[in-house]
Image 1: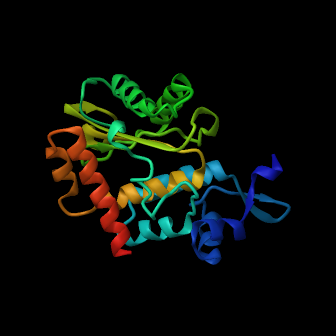
Image 2: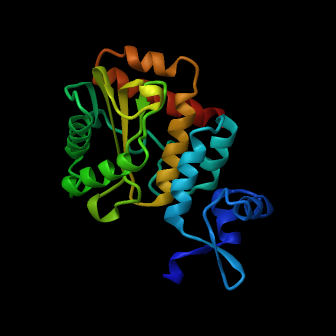
Length: 236
């Protein structure tokens, strides 16, 4: 439907990017868009998916630009991860040994807050996203999430984190195994992109992944994640 699309100017504002640069990209087929009455129009869901893929190759500065372009009323104290992750939504170690069982456990852990209203729908949406483009990275970390926000299935945006005792096949490049998982469940696209950008920056912090992988229990893992989140906010 026409009202679902946004203009080039709106997209530039949303992404914090130069309008002319975006126009070049869409003209060259590097950005999903379509001509409507001679003007470029963009579907928010397609843009979100495009940006997700782009961010996988972004450096810290580029991810920071994405962060700064997103505004979420749910984020408290400028901490996009700590606002949605809690000690009770952190599980180390996890018992799951398959992709499905890990996803089920992550959703169950998130449900400890009583803010996950439709766990079956969320599982189906996350599995669908994984079937299209797996969310595993080469560093043993995965960030599973639905393709689109699920406001009707959640009371509030949520992150759950877990680490399995050994790596499992999760679709990472070069068939590398995955043992650390951040399940991201957001009620709107801006919050979703903000959280993904901040997690991407955290994963690039020297020593963060190793320290998190060595954490002995849930509380220690939670504290390491929050410290990294706070560090990036203080450095901004």
